[in-house]
Every structure is written in structure tokens, then in C-alpha cells.
Length: 208
Length: 407
Image (cartoon, rainbow over all chains, first blue to last red; front, top):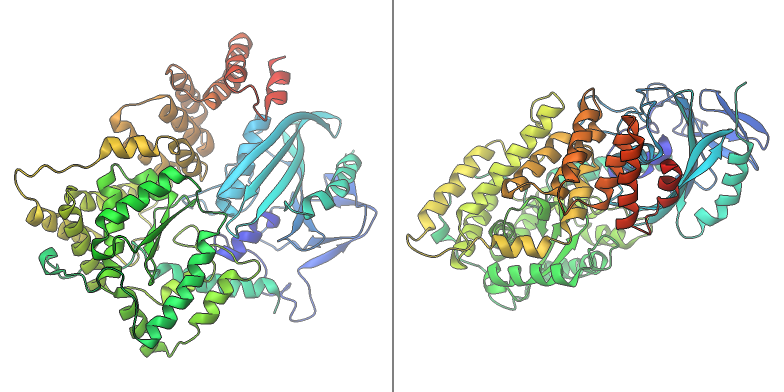
């Protein structure tokens, strides 16, 4: 999930796309593509949502990205981002990582409960995003895609000394993880983007 | 070039800077320098008189201002006072001139800046087994200042690179979006690059070691503890590598320590030379443990959630040498749960079950014990564990989820 690696890029914790071939901007290409304000497929296409306004979608980079994870942003990944997980299967990872890396983000397991999923996300922030503190503000049941899911609200202090706030809404359906996640600077950007996020969550549909 | 690329370029710089940062990790001693030969080169209230050093101090004042106001500073008067009292003890002639800051970074590191302020990472507190070890690290860092290593290194570096941009680098620290990155895990933005200007030679590291051991002994700390720290660190690195099925990482903190074992041997020899038979040394173990007692769960939490199972388990077992308790058993369970390879679920469940048998088990141990029981198809016992969790933590942020799960 590129959104989570934004700080890592600043800090050197993880290698990412950005500086090679397509996407550098040097040859007229951008790292981002336009998402129009209409229903669009996200991730590997197992989930679709309605974008309430035009968004910037981070282009997928071969070998760097996980196919069922997609990242959008309005103001750039340092300030805000919405990420989608569109049916991640058992034993898969949210982000590519080296098998022998000392610090790793746990793999997703189909039998994970909500606290296990949120702990997996917390490790992602800490290991790949360099978060030094993360607080759960609330974890509660919530319907998502017609299934019993969860809503996790949290905030984290990152190595750029900025507090960010996030909300993840997700559910495990038929053993696969579906999730939409908002993560933005705690001051201004989180609150500003929350209505969009909620509209996107409400519009989410699984491929029939 | 896109902003991302600029960041990546800066990243490479930072990584380079970190490798050579003026911290505990740099350099290795080739020839042993005898502690008795180490004499402080500065006295109390030292102020620079040379123009270049005065300029450097001015820049460092701005850097210190940024660090002092950082969100990462652990604002705990008890711990701040403790660290101040230690540097005030082992700081030699400059003891009362030093300032010291504790940053919340789950990594082993400490560093001294040219104007006499030191930074200690919270990960260091987790790894120290007693006050003598903490004092040893701080004495080592003080040694760099007392022997004027930073200005020597900087002048040397400037000669080599004709680099005068130090002021603009410091300016960058306070700039918008200044990242933080120091050491292997996190470094203070361009401070990482800044610190690389003060990279120490092996001889300087040997001097700081010798000075540190001497300062320890003079203040009744067992000098051998500085050597013990290296032994513990090597053990941790080996355990971390073993769990990920690889050899100890050659590009890690020991990069600049091709002979870390010999450094340990030198420190041991220093200690033997300095130790006065019959003298009553105090490692300050009880004092240390009681001072960090409140923050220890946070330190453990920060470490374990990095999901570096070898290092975390090594640290937990090291702490458990004083006896297992509910907190340590709980975090042992967390190590297995996060590692999550076949068999780990069972190991985690057993650790949670063991944790809750102790009276000091944290509330979270009961929650994870409840989840484990639920997954094992033991709903009545799970319900009881969850109820215990909610009793211990009535305002738990996940209370709504737990209540629904209890049914």
C-alpha cells in the first residue's frame, strides 16, 4: 500500500516506485492517474466504489505493488490518502517485503478477528511507515458490504513528527479481506476528507 | 524530477548519514587506548573561542531547539530528571553543562552533539539491564565531548570535502515537513546528514570507550558493564537474524565495527585494569528497574510491534532473567502472534494463558486470551476472559467490539 510508504520514502525504510522508468514525471508521465467522479473498480476489480469527486490514483508499478491494494489521494500522500483492499486472500501481504527482512508486516489470515487485522495494520504503520506511536481511538462492529465487519479509528505519530488520524472499515467475507481506509493529517485533512470517505464506503460493492 | 525522487535522493543521503552518524554505533577500536591516558580536554563551562566552532555551536543551538520541541520527546519529568542526574554524574568536568533528551524511537542509540546536548532513544532504555549500563553509554557519549571529537572530526571532514553547508542543513531541520530519521530505524531529517559530518574515527571511538569506562569507575559503577552491553547487542542481532533464517546482517549497526568482538575484549581489559579489588561498586539495578517501571510496558510494546521476533524474544528472555511475570508472558505471546508462522498461534495462545495466571497480567492479555479461547471453540471461558478485560479496562476503546463478540 503505497500510501503507507510515503513516510518510508522520506525516511528510507522501504523501497518504492517513483524514481525509475514511468512515473518520474520527467518524460511527461505522472505517478498518478485520474479517477473520475463515477463508479470505478478498485484493487484487482473485486470491489467497486463511487468516487464523490475526482481523485488521484497512484499508478501501479509492476513488482512493487500488491494487486488487490490501491491508493488514492486528494492533496498528496503526505497529507491524505484513501486505500482499498479488494478481497485479499489468506496468507497474502498488504505490501511486498523481503522474506528475510528483520521487521515484517504480518500476513493476512482468513481467520483473523478485527483486533488481529488492526494489529496487522499497526505493524504496517510501524514497520513500513515508521510510526513511533499508534493509539486506537475506537474499535466497533460495523456492517460493510452487507457483512458483519468493523470500524477502527486510530491516530499515529510518524517520524516526520506529524500526528495523523485514520479510519478503517472492513470485513472478512468468504475468507477474504475487504477494507477501505482513510489516513490523513490529524489537523484539517482528516476531517475534511471524512465525508468523502464515508460516501465511498457507503457506495462500496463486491463484484457480483 | 518529481518530489518523490527528491525525497528518494534525500533518503540515500540520510541512509549514508546514518551509517556514519556520530552515535554509539560508529567506529571500532584497533589499538587499545588505556583509560588512565584519557584526560578531559575541556573544563566546566566550556565555550568555544575559535570562529568556526562558535558558528557550529550557533547552528547546534538551533538544532537543539528543534529537538527539545519535537513531538518525539518523551515528556516524563521523572525520566528526564533521572537522565539528567546520570549525565550530571558521569559527565566529567562538563557534567553540569550537558543537556539530555529522551526521544520515543524503538531503537538502540544515543548520541552527543557538538554543543553538549545528548539524545537517547527509548529503545536504549529497554535494552539496558541496569543503571551502570545506561551510565556507561552516557559516559561514552560524554567522552566524545570531553575529548573534543566533534570539532576534530568536523574540521577533518571539512578539509576533505570543502563542505560549508552546515548552516543550511540545520535550517532544513526546522523547515516544513522535516522528517525524522536517526540511527537504523529513525533519524532526524537532515540531522542524519548533519551528524555524518562528525563521524568518528576508530581511534576516537576507542578514546570514548576508555574515557567512558574511566568515568564509570570513578562514580562507582562496575566498569565491566560497558563491555556487557556489546555482548547483549551482538546476542540480539544474532537472534534477530536466526529467526529470519539468515546470517547476522552485515549492513546493520555493526557495519563500522569489523572487530566488534575486539572492542568488547578491549572494554573488558579496560574494566579489569580499572576495577579496584574490594571496592564496593553498585550497578544500580533496583534503582534502574524502579525508575523505568512505568514506561517499560510502552517500551516493550514499541519493540514487539515491529515484528522482529528474534530481537524481541531475545530482549524478553533477557528481562525474564529476573523472573517471568504477566507482562513478559503477554509480550512473548504477542511476538508469536505477530510472527504468525505455522505453530505460532498455539504458542501465542499458551503464552496468553500463562500471562493471565500472573497477578500483574495486563488487561490486553485477558483480551487476547479471550480471542484465543473463542477461536478454540470455548465460548464460555472466552466470555469470562473478555469480562475480566472489560472490568480491568472499563473505558477500553474496543469495548463495543468486545461486547458484541461476547454475545
